[in-house]
Length: 321
Image 1 (cartoon, one colour):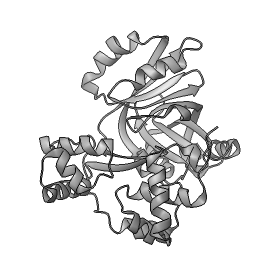
Image 2 (cartoon, one colour):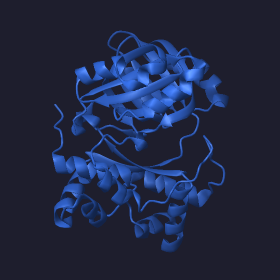
Image 3 (cartoon, rainbow, N blue to C red):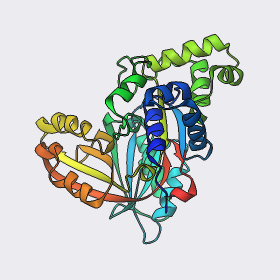
C-alpha cells in the first residue's frame, strides 16, 4: 500500500507543480515556512523518487491507443506499450479496454502504428485508436487544490508568461534547444551551471534559452507524483460524448473541475477523454452523475485505472504499480 504524504509535503509538491525549477528559498517564502524545514523535505521527496521534475516539449499531435487483451495479459501489453520510447503514459484499466496509452504518433504515421506495430503486441485481442485533436488540459496544468490562492500567486508571479503556440508547434527548435530539452527531461531542476556543462553552452546562453523556451510555451516543467500519495486514491479514465455545438462548453467546464488531471478532444464516437483522480468512490460517483460539467454531455463511459506503468514519459517505480 502506498503511503500518503503529510500536509507540508503535499504543499511542497503543490509548489513544484506550479514551478518545478523554483528554489527552496522561494518555495519556503511562498509557503510561509522556514527554508531549513522546506529544503530537507523537498530534497527527500526528490531523492526518493516520490516526486520527479521533468522538462517536456510542448504537446504535439498524439494517438491514444486502447487495447482489449487476453485474460491475464493486461499488464504484459501495458508494459510492451510503456517500453516504447514514444509512449507518454500507459495504464492498466479495470474494464473491457484492458490498457490504454498515449503515443507520440502524428496522423501521418498512423498506418505503421495501426497496421504493423499494434497487431504485433503480445496478448492483444483488439485495438482501437483515437487521434488527439486538441488538448483541453495536460497533466502539467493539474492543480488539485494543494495551495491557497496567495501561495499560488507568490510562485506564479516569477514565471514567464507563455506565448500562444499553435498545437503541435515544433519549428524553431535547433540542436542546442534539443540538447537542453533532453537534459531537462532527465532532471528539470538542474541548475544553469550543470546544464551548461551537459550541453557545452555558456551558462548565460543556457539561461536565455531555458527562459525563452518556457516563455514561448515550448518547454513545460512538470512535477510527476503518484496522485495516490496526495490523497487521490481513485483514478479513472472517462469518455464523454456531446452534441458538436456543446463540445467546447463541456471542455471548458472540464477545465474547471479540480479532479481532472488530463483531458483532450479526440476522434471517434466520444469527442472527449479525461483522466481523473479523486479521493473516494463517492467523489467519482458525484463527478459522473451530478457535477456541473455534465450539463452538455449526452453519453458517458468510464473505467478505473488499476495500475500505471508510465507517466509523463517516465517509467513508474515498481512499488507504485
